[in-house]
Image 1 (cartoon, rainbow over the protein chains, first blue to last red):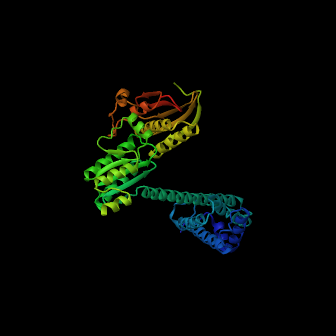
Image 2: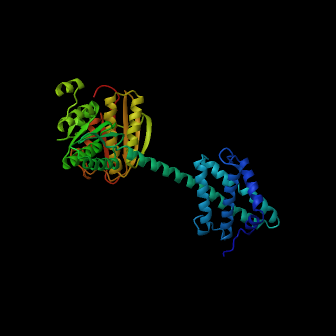
Image 3: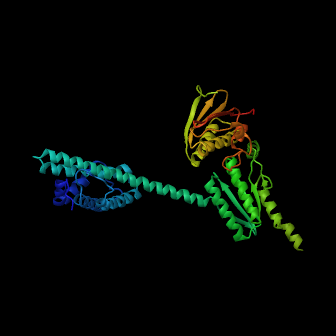
Length: 296
Length: 138
């Protein structure tokens, strides 16, 4: 086992762990890092205790010669405990700076104790304090990293969920599908749109697909290209594609851009697209009285 | 044409497709705040989308600055440090594309804007400045 340069820190961690724990929690309270509104006294203490144990284990297994690297194997326990606790606290609404403050509050109880022990060996004292500070600072940074990573994971998940949400293919009538597009149509989304539409064509044996772009604010050449390619793919599947919801301002802009929609059917509103689509599948929407008269 | 004396309204980095979307949103918002005509907004935001995407796709990313100009106009300067445009004339021609796209972006942006200036140097990059009226006229 490697010799630790934090011999005295290790000693006090062993001999006075309960006292250090109590002082630490008290210190955290003074620094405003305690959230008694979110965690019970008992929970706070349990969390702090598992952190302290993992810390002691890390120190014992080899904090030597001043090279401290949180990525080392003997810190894996502490890393695990740190991420777990950060995760738990963040979930309950603890802010990242409070989490960091909690970790940093561990410094003074330990330093106080080794100061007494090393009163007549200032060199060793300074060395241990330096190394201890370095380690604890790094832990604090690590909790922020965990916090950021969790946030990013949440954002990524929401983005994916939105992506899913934004390509709903709806069956309007037998053999008639519609896909209302909203927001931006970047390459990734265009791919999703195309895939879900083509799959739906097979599933519903659709003959007409209406892609409604009322909710798309900007139709630039890329969006136009995606739309036209999707329309071409729909045609290859043997269905007819209507692009609806082209407003006057979008129409003018597309003309200026030089976008040629070729043989793709376009309609200004989803209403006219629907009428067109129903005609194609041999259905019409009629007032009830008219239908009853036909019955007789 | 430089926007030296104009009031800068926004400054954006262009690195990914999402930045292109952001450029559209920001320019659209600024024009709306200036009470621009809806048609002018749609036209200019579309032009911005084209040149911002060009900077990302061809220029390896860049920056965009948005200016409010005297006389009820908005101006955009889009700068990249990419390979430059070898043949500007060809690049402005409809149907010309080096990446199998529609090839109407640059020419389209020019038609959708009022003034449209390209400065490009091989291996040094491309700067495009373009303006639009906020209301009326062309």
